[in-house]
Image (tube, rainbow, N blue to C red; front, side, top):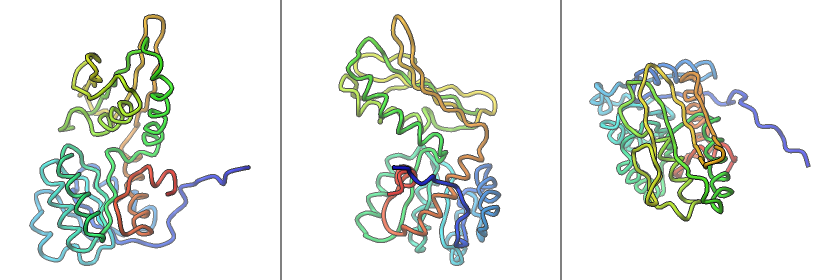
Amino acid sequence: MCRKPRTLAKYLLTMKIAILGYGRMGHMIEEVATQRGHQVVARIDKADAALLEDGSLREADVAIEFSTPESGYQLCQAALKAGLPVVTGSTGWNEQLEKLKAEVQSSGRGGLFAASNFSLGMNLMMILNEQLAQLMAPYPEYTPRIQETHHIHKLDAPSGTAITLAEGLIEQTPSLHNWHLGLETHDGSLGIEAIREGEVPGIHTVIYHSDIDEITLRHEAYSRRGFALGATLAAEYLQQHPVGVWSMRDLILHK
């Protein structure tokens, strides 16, 4: 049976978008969203968080948040209270994000689309990472570790994407129980090496090393455009799924 190919065709309904966190990613999201036929009606930087109280979100259909670990929870919560479904992509506030997800789920209203990485390619790699980990689990001769490289402006380490990869790998590997920031994997803890250099958009590598060979699964982002496209696709997804907590896995697998 032939599967119908999935495409990135333009969304049929025009959205009005509020961008929360108007830095490099915010600017790129506006460019991509506009090219897909949408309109940005509010741009709120982390320094302008007080504007959330003056009705700036009133015209929007959806909010896309890429701010900072310090302001992510506040901005997303304000948008949800204003009745907007929210796409959130900032990382480094995991505990508060889990709290936000629980709030949305328990309330039975509002939509939250959260991901540590919005690249379609990266999320396909996350699925492959889990499948590879399952295949490698019976072979203790291979020691896994993760390496991630980002630009010097990235505030958190390891990256949220590296943590997501680690969690997927650990779930499929009985000998591993947690992860740590470091070069080596030992004592049941998966090593994650975090490198900060230049203007690198993002490189993530899962490595399985043995005495005789090495297996690597690698994704490299060439620019932020892939993340902006994924975030815009997530906002489009929320217009069709306005209630609940969603992820890129839901979008990719068409759940």
